[in-house]
Length: 323
Image 1 (tube, rainbow, N blue to C red):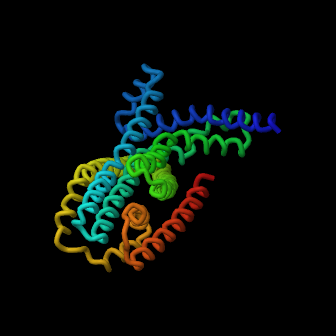
Image 2: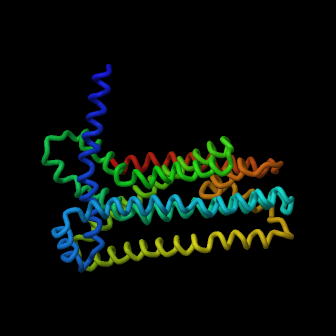
Image 3: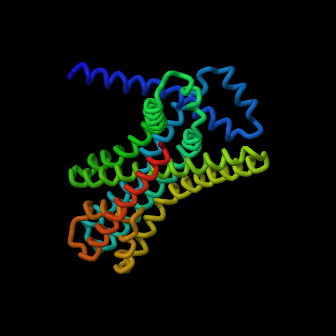
């Protein structure tokens, strides 16, 4: 039994080790695809520096892992402020719940934008299948090629997605010392990672299809490339802009609702929206002590149940695209 387990483990490690080369090829292909008229210059860089792609691969992972660690600053900042206001009794519970949920909604929305920014181009290259053509010349079965493919997509996104899933819950546990908040945050983060991963696969598959279709005409290829890169830069600048303004905007909400309470009907309706409001509401339910209206609790749980169904459906759809 132990020998069988050891053999399975060694086989998985072999596939994981092989996936390193397909990861590098995917990054190389995505950079060439986005280089446009500067492809020759980029290829020259590859030839001069053999470690160029390896360095780029690690640098991208570290950069986006750092971003996913920084993103929780917004909800944590709000959580600290809410605790102070709760102790002072300055605001109504519904007001604090609403502001906390909006801060968490901003956080979850930014995670999707950063996930697309990090993985959109490389995932589209992965979905094209071009990086696996050389593997088909080796004595691998179709089943083993699929295993290498799964290991490749995992290796390409592993560290940022792990940080995205574990970073926020661990930080919340350290700050709050509350295990319930940690478990709820972990559940939401886990589902958010699956949701982000599924969106990446679906978007990557669509982009891969557009690039493959556009190869028949150079004008269309250039148009698709320009639009893709334009969308990429819009996501990058939008997410940076939203993040920089996020804390200030939340602070303004405290000032706005200092004398008036937000409309409870609006709060309940927003809780029914599966993403990003429902997961944010669920975390807020665990972080804010006190009696909240049953309508608010029920809308939050209903919205979260819908979110789980959407995540499951998207994940199954993304799995079919991977196969």
